[in-house]
Length: 62
Image (cartoon, rainbow, N blue to C red; front, side):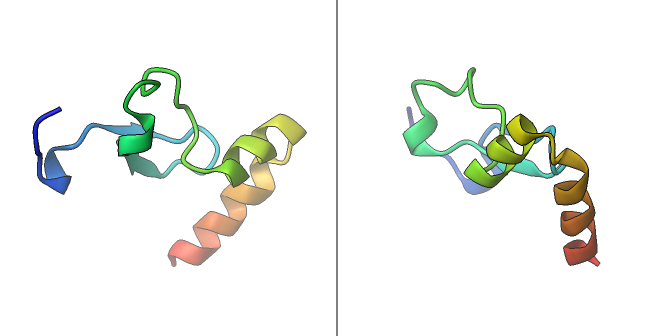
C-alpha cells in the first residue's frame, strides 16, 4: 500500500458505538472482515450490552 494521509484512509462505522474508525496497518489483510472499532465493542455486542455502551459513548461525547 502506498503512503497516504490520515484523511485519505478508508473508514467504517462501528455498529455498537456508532463511531467511525479508520484503517490500521495491522488490519491490512483482514479489512473486509473488521466490523468493530475496538475489543470492547466486539465483546459488548456478543454479550448483548449494546445499549449501555452506546449510552456511555454518547455521554462521553458531550
